[in-house]
Length: 301
Image (cartoon, rainbow, N blue to C red; front, side):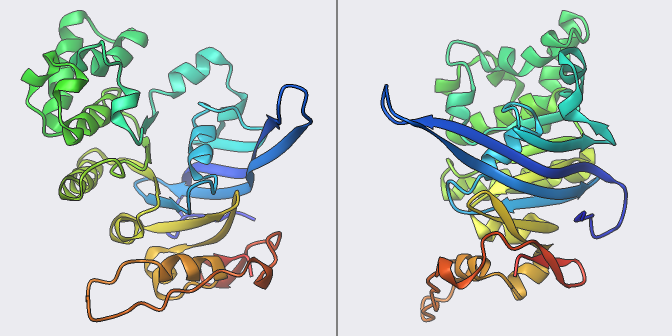
């Protein structure tokens, strides 16, 4: 089974039966237990698409994103980028592949070196990949600063001297400096004030249109997902339980977990009290496979 992009174009990214297990030990002499954080996850993303991966904290969505980029090594499965098996890449080939696949982390304060000026942090990937002369790297850093809406003069500052929104733009500039095709955006606005979130989301959409980017957007804010994503996959306890076009998913959720999740969304009208659904795990089979319940809409029911 493959969950191909709605356009039926050749996928940019293909994830098949991805598994990630962690071994957890209880106490120094305790017995080890295996936790399956990602459990047989499959999906495809088409070029230029924004694919949302949603679920509660601990559902496995961040681990999935990191496994795709091999920041965390998967236990099993297959990840193909432009038809090539990413998990089979030797170290040097993986290093080159990462020019085309980048990540924007959730918390820019922790992902930026506090002792490094932000211009040097943005230019570091160019130095790692030995691209350009020092003057060309400096020019490229200024270019991407302007691209993400930052004054290039800020490049001489340290992360602590910038606002949260500015730091997140620096993180985005660092991801874009190598001109990638795929950007994994891991909760890119969750650490920001609400007033700044819309600015960053609008920037992401503008950059996608200008640079022909493909996004894997990992998020828990369903309002943002509904606004920006073409398709959405819902994760529950490490498994994908529903995948559909965003409009179809929000209009007609089929899995009980998706229904409960969407019922928790805030309602703009204060006079309306939303009917919050309480999930009963006994009401569905967690191991049920995805099946196509309507064209392009898959659910584990």
